Length: 355
Image (cartoon, rainbow, N blue to C red; front, side, top):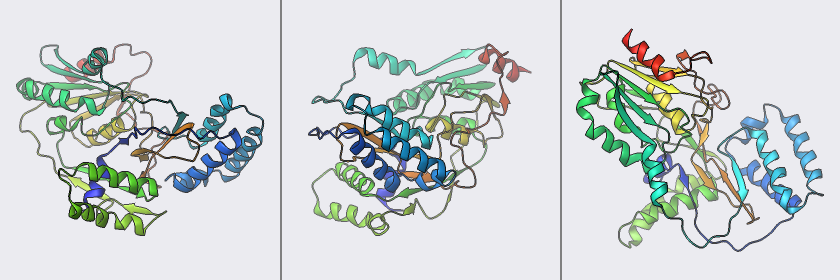
């Protein structure tokens, strides 16, 4: 398994902080370039369009005609209308904001991040964890939380993991919980990266940044590892050697006998990956509502489309579940659906564990 592939699999979002010279495009030109970019570099294009190609062609034609008379300030709504056809939350477009300074964390921002990871003992013997985000900033906070509460987690009767509202981030955040909630090895569906110049450049730049010392040999190794992508430009490249990966996580001998995961419609991306993994455990029940349904395509990167007044972000891979097991706009279904009559989900979970 090549190093660039490993980097690609675990890298969720690469944000480019370069300063761009503004090249303004009129609305029709912007839309034409956006269409060309998505039709050639969005990994879900063929699958999404084949479901209703006539509607896609009609919508595209209507918007191209409309773009002739739309002023620049309102063009973003036309572009977003086109993107909405794909119903993929991993595609987003926004006006580019001119900035020369990298945003730094502030005390207020740090306080908000710390509150995204919290825990407490409830009802005497139930360990409750609140994880409202899987953003990378929460990797260390959750590691420390699990480490500091190791004894309580190992001795608790039940655990409630509340991920309501968790829109995703990185799978690295929830890894410390898996030894305590799993009962067997994980079956993980792999992904296929859609090889483009943007993907290759991003992987190369990222890999070079990890080189600790200047070394021509290291750069050559990186370029050699990217050969498979270059040889398959415009095609899908499988991550690893199999469409199914088996992750044999070392399971803790001590831990809760029951685990409840609270999830709702706002849970997406890495949040859904967590649900997908947790539900394979014999002692886990997912309670709540279906999740958001944004797990078919991922690993977002910025894609330039020659209109620098806009930022376009697209996913770079598709799950090998497709086309047989799609989750986009369907979501992961709960084991126990909590309807509107249940006002206090935590209380419901406590009673379920104690029954």
